[in-house]
Structure formats: structure tokens, C-alpha cells
Image (cartoon, rainbow, N blue to C red):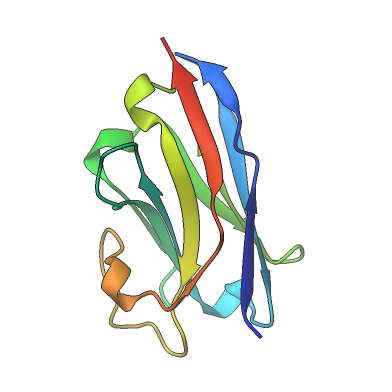
Length: 128
């Protein structure tokens, strides 16, 4: 069955960097839409970034533009989230998710309502 496994979360100081990985199985990321989401302490889940292979587009929430980069390695069937210049407000559990089947309805910053399969999450903590 479809499985997503996140890794790479850690505790870092403000200004630090981390690279999160989302390893996929039972589907090919080369023909999928994958999103990164996060949920900070006491906050609602929010979208962070998405990569959509139907047109090769990437999208970011405004708060991470210029600092985070979403990418993929088709050979490893893995999606990455490179996070630079981290801030305390980036703290949270980070999840990757994908859409079952055709995902051409997904546009812009990912909407969690469209995403069917989720990983277990990886914790990112940024201290000041």
C-alpha cells in the first residue's frame, strides 16, 4: 500500500538549516502531487510547499518563500524539503502527503483536503 516516511527532523538554532526527506513507496513521485505540511504547538496544520508533476510546478506558503526549497529525486522516489534560515516559528511536526490517483485539480499552495495519504511526521524544533 501507499506509504510515506518522513525523516530529517531535528533541533536546531535560529538561522540553521535542515533537509527533510519523504520516502515514498507503492507509487511513483514522478507522476504524483506531493505536499509538505506542518503543525506547530497550539496551531492548526498548515501547508508549507507542494510539488506537482503534472506540470512540474512548485508552490510555497508566503512565510517560507526564499528560505525553503521543495525538490524530488525520482531515482530514489523521495521528495525533499530543504529548510534554510530557520526561525522559531518554523517549529512543528512536518508531514508529507500525496493525492490518490490523478491530481490535476491540485493548484497553488497545497490544500490538505485533496491529500489522501500521509506520513507519520518528523519533528522540527528551532530554538532562539
